[in-house]
Amino acid sequence: MKYAIRWFVLGLLLLQAHALQAQQSDVPVQPTVNETIPFQLGNGFLLFVEGRIGNLAPLKFILDTGATQTILDARIADKLTLRRQKGKVLNYDRSANIEWAVLPELQIGPLDARNVRLMVGDLKEFTDYATGVDAIIGLDVLRMLQSMRIDYDTMTISLKSLKPTGNLSTSPQPSQAFTVALPVQDHIVYLMVDTALQGILLYQNRVRQLKFTDRVAQVHIGRFLGEQAKLSRVRIGLQESQMRVLILPEAPDALSTDVDGYMGIDALNARLVELDFAANTLRWQ
Image (cartoon, rainbow, N blue to C red; front, side):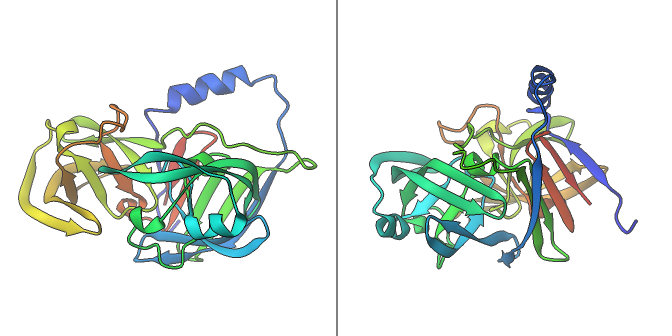
């Protein structure tokens, strides 16, 4: 094989996944459907795909495992005349004003989600790459998939989903963070896997035990302003290396206390990445 296959078990979610499998041992296995769709790579890391919302198609989506909730651009909500309620949401290091709405139908490849409760807002508040984007698809919807396999050589994404049965409506499951346990300098750092982030972002108040070198203050990376530094003895799979990371001073209060930051999948330096939502594992080669 051209690449050695490396397995990276999601430490935070593994026990929960095993418990769930035990509880469902007597439940009949539902048929699944696989579909491969093309994607465009933006800025070397963003995943752009086409999808449908109601009778509006084709629409442009960003697949974002670092977002706990799906966000619909306000102009699309206006076209659909959706009823909305006001609210706020965490966006990495600050809160943003948003509205909530229920979307009758959202479709990406084999995934056909009905009655999706999602956020509505100006996508420019959430990403610097919002031009021409109609929605950011977060974990609340992506976790309805069995798995998502990203092939950077063929520029395709294989989506595995439960086979639709009749006109059964599907509501999103609670958006568990897709989190990895990363060994760094004899410590374990817990990072959310983020398909819409480049590199690694850490919160200083969550990783005080780590030692950084070559720190550079006041560095702008996209909409983030923080320190950039070298972090040694980062073990990803079988390899240990030194990486440049972005450090923000403090984690937002709304971020779970057992999450230390975010990891973009580009940090894996892989040509094939699979996020197995059913088994809570990350595989790459």
